[in-house]
Image (cartoon, rainbow, N blue to C red; front, side, top):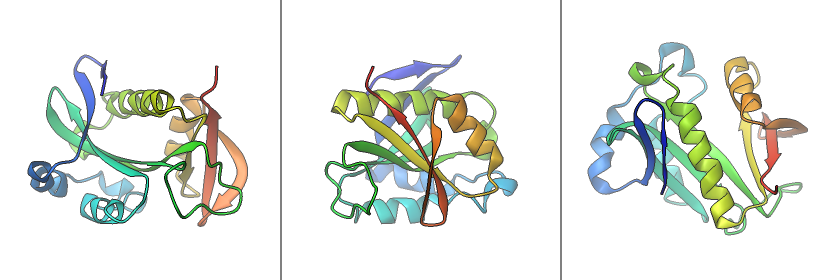
Length: 162
């Protein structure tokens, strides 16, 4: 997968066994714990998702976070209203000591590139109500509220077709 530069080389790499201890030890800021599942939970869930891909977010090769994406074209549990051609960001966490460095934005650009390269025509995510920082973050990347509520979260989406 390509890398993005934010004073450091940011990359997404598929999670492998040797990454697990480091990923399990990463912590989010205390004020974000209610919005982000522990990495161990995310990795376990992705083991059972069709079309699910889980990546280590790396900064200069050091693991600093986790990202989980679903290619809805491969997923077997679409709900009414889901776009079957979308890539969906299910999880993203950046460790507390790496917050505010642009790593999340660079990782999201790589995720958007990943989806485009795979041929997805849309990119979607959902945000817990009240997580205004995440809402602003995704809006800054071009995602917009769709008006749908999916599993009690606000759906956001953007076209990947140019």
